[in-house]
Length: 368
Image (cartoon, rainbow, N blue to C red; front, side, top):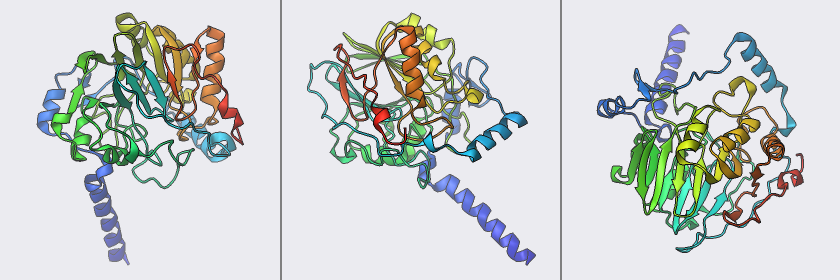
């Protein structure tokens, strides 16, 4: 019996090793050459990327016990009681058209600016996990089929977590993307998935680049990274600045509130539009995911005009009610005099127009 038990345990170990090293969804590994290049970054210390301000979350015994109790207690409002309403997605614009944005749920959105189309964090999969069995997308489907998307000029990524970088989505987008613009280290995942290195640009914080007449900047965020058991903070996380001739846009990526927002605002603001993380938060891990009130404050710090709260409306990755992020953000925005935009999934709006989406569509979903 002991021999049989040892054989079973050995089999589990071997299977686990094989999955972690050969299952493509986990992404790529970094060579010594790549690590030596990353070592030149001010964000890279002792083989890992780091935040510049102290960033940790409460892992005390009492906090862990309270989180376990909250998870076990359950909450029927962590998911909507009915499929979410979606708009019919419009095809991208022709050159010379006004700047438009389409939100696809969570942090995925399409920016159409000065005739260019840029997809940000295009997580179009069913669930934010390498094994998509549970925690399915609220809307079940997307307002479009990936196969029907026209070629986009660029895919821009904020970091490598599964709810932002999805293996299946990247594979379906292959052949439809001209270039991938990513933070340091994330290119290794794309290369493993068959993306040519010539199509990938990796950037550090405060890097500035020109792209098809636009100016982009890779800017700081307060977060972390990793897709497996051994690659915590092996890649960088970031926010993004996009500057056109007439429009400036800021995307926060994921992260906690911090002084970097004011630094970004002072250097690149004011912004016509910000897409700010707002969801999957908890007071116990606020250092890595902003609370909705902090979302509004961060928008003000970067000197934004219109605010779209993102990182909600698709998956349950925290303990709050699914609609709580937007409710709290709207309330905080109204108290602060901030113009907040609340598009339905798949709804396109023009940044320069005053008639922007502000309906409370989420209240019409049964169970909210």
